[in-house]
Length: 203
Image (cartoon, rainbow, N blue to C red; front, side, top):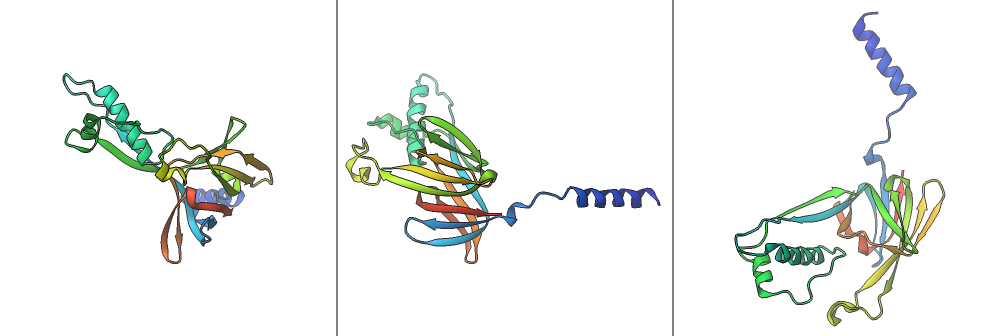
């Protein structure tokens, strides 16, 4: 047996003994939204969107505080946890939207885990360990948000079933600017996580 044949034989024996992990496209997701819509998605992923604001300085200007305000404004726009400045100055708005606006880099990445809170204790759960998530939402009373959006201010909790049969009951979850992305028979589907009531993974 020549060297090439020997290497091929050993490679085949290795694959037979230690099969490769299932590809991501073998996973499907069953999704039900709060509005009652349902999908079965192939190649599902949780995509986290973010924006990085440049902290460049201009001569003679205190851009540090202005950039921080602009960053807060960006966070609110993207659905992050940081609230915007209650009364941003005209200079701040000009800097953010005008010719002096800080450079921003927008991107996204796949989430590999989610963080669930229970009694203030954070638990990081790998997505590969999750079988299903049932979200719960409750309207926040005495919301500090402006009246025209206070009615939509909700707090999310979740019941999480693990692949090994375990269960985690979280009294708070917030996935920020995250969407569930997958492929359906009609094409690509992007669903904001806040619109999801039940998410189940089939592996």
